[in-house]
Length: 167
Image (cartoon, rainbow, N blue to C red):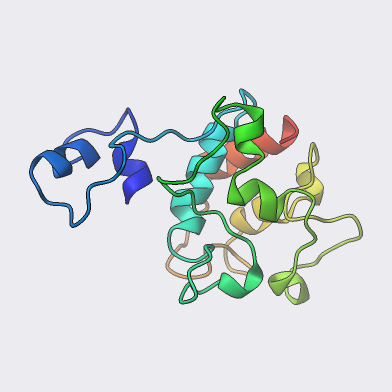
């Protein structure tokens, strides 16, 4: 996965090593990637949501399981985020654009949505759907929906920190 393989912290078979070895079908425009960071926890939250939600289901690929939800959390190594890498870059990510201030859709029938809920409600974890569904297991609305039996406390913590700091 290009975003993770291109991070400065990646090692071993990272994007640069794969390119150098001639193992990529198409060479990327760059072998380094960054996750936008506003200094409020966005980098960790966006990275967690990208890998755990966006890569497999929540993306705009017509074959993706959750494409119909219009909640997209996959970052692209070729996305042209704002050049400052800060708040304006965070606000241009698919996650921000399709989650912050957006009323839940697909799972709202199963998830006990109260008035004022958004996928992410700036500054209010209690009224944010994403950390609620990521933080539960054994319910029809748990996310991810299959093959997980334990909550990723660290990952949910990244998301709640970012929300608390008003994404």
